[in-house]
Length: 389
Image (cartoon, rainbow, N blue to C red; front, side, top):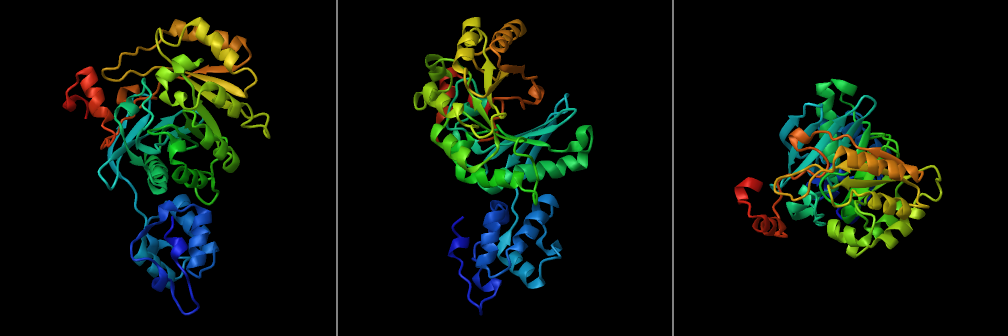
């Protein structure tokens, strides 16, 4: 967002004189950055509040319609800025009401976003990267490889589009987005500078007005960025754990080799030290014969001792050509009983949207993989390209 910092205003210049030649996408700005932008234009900062409210709360993308801005300001903005959203390439509704969108980006990549309606909430699962750099072995997203980070506009654009499309659909929960989880494609903390402004907009009363407890960032454990997030944002935190010891987690979540469990647990123990009632959600995908034995449950309970934790057990959602299988219901129930017996709140996630490949770990999008990981994986499992792409 360096463009607005380069804008200087003199008393004789108009906004049209000092705005850059390349159009700025206004979706890249949270309210503090938008206020700074207007100050550089020589305009009152409260115009930023009005613009944020028009765009995000009102869902207005036509600058001409923003009638409480002066005509000259609107004209300048129309000539030098725009509101550029991803394109809806595909939309499919699951039998259980879950909706999956494929959003096409300007560079030809595509990302996936999922809406999960329930009786008391509507949760939107948002992507932060095109593909994922982490390559967790049980996740379909990781097998597609990685292309790039999403911009703030591309992240918040998923929310903007989902809110507007849902409002037209109505139906259960009136199509309302009450919760956002940064659990889609990608590792959010590896795109921190773009994810944070997007989450700021989700929390902003002038935009989407969500509670800090209703916006959740999920990370595989990028420890230094977890510490930064703790100091700069009040959103809820989820950690993709999936194993109770380093040996197994190194296999399932390769990031663990860089940030092993002792480092991860150290930051988790004190993450909500000023808010003692808040807990970190630890996500644990249940893989048959891999991490679902009773001794794993006991190790998990020991690992989380002294951590403000709740555990969410996730039945594995298969994808083509994976060698993993979902744990049996009996194994998941037995695992949950052991962890609960240690005093840790433990839930079993209900699988949603798997008939449209919208369940956890199934989001793949269309990634121009610059890592060549997808190509190597296809060769490993002997799958023709046409089957995967």
